[in-house]
Image (tube, rainbow, N blue to C red; front, side, top):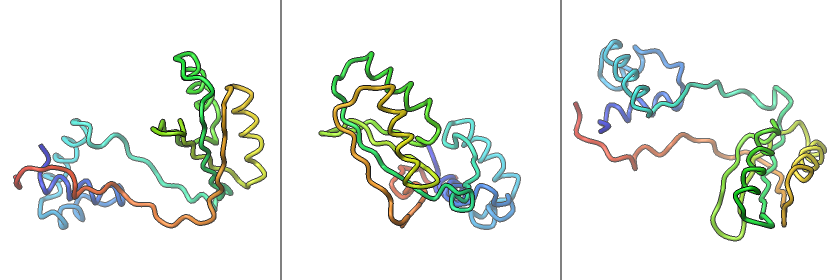
Length: 158
């Protein structure tokens, strides 16, 4: 079970995984070596899946985001497998979620411009038959945050 200190360490790391062990230690009142051991344990226990660099999309010329909702025409295992292969093969599709309700999937697509969406749309429809495809273009990124760790159950401090 996670402790308050574990959650505090995770909170620091999800905001900036480059934070030094000494700075993490100052924030959670532990030595750098104790922080290192806890981080290793958190990684071993699967709480930390991986460390990544957050890239500047605008600077890389990838400032356009399009969210696409997809409703399937059929709901078979074969269609689902084909859909999964299709979205995996298109690098501009960076996130895919299966949903409840009238929409089956939500895709997050990152592109240089709105004009580039047509290429991705054609790549999707060439691979998979769909019932309804609806695109929404992001006008402004407002919030990007880490996980709300205050909801995670924890034990007393150790």
